[in-house]
Amino acid sequence: MSFVVDASVTARWAFVEGDPNAELAFEKLLSDSAIAPGLWWYEVRNLLIMSERHRRTNPADTEAFLRLLATLPIHLDSAPVQESVLHLARTHRLTAYDAAYLELAQRHQIPLATLDADLARAARAEGVRLLNRKRTS
Image (tube, rainbow, N blue to C red; front, side, top):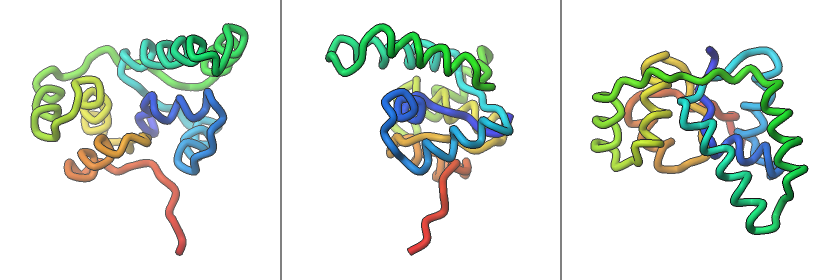
């Protein structure tokens, strides 16, 4: 697996909201694969349903996006290390959900693709590389 992808990145793909780091993650999936904790499946569907409820999208948009996701090499992990998830959540004041993404990246020693500032901060503190474009200024 080349990187861990979280729901914040996937949301940008769903709603075609440009973000260089989300775009990089999508581009990497053309030649590599990603992994996500099992909860990602539910998070993605929840964000799509919430978008429908707020009339931002409709069921046809949801189905089209889910068909696209099904073509991407994103694998689900169902074996989190409970002690590590809890430790990361406590140490960095993360939700257990966010800590699951960080634990997965740590366990596989691969970068994390996230747009969540708190999760990114915790990843840096733990020495987990973030998947992001280098900024030139």
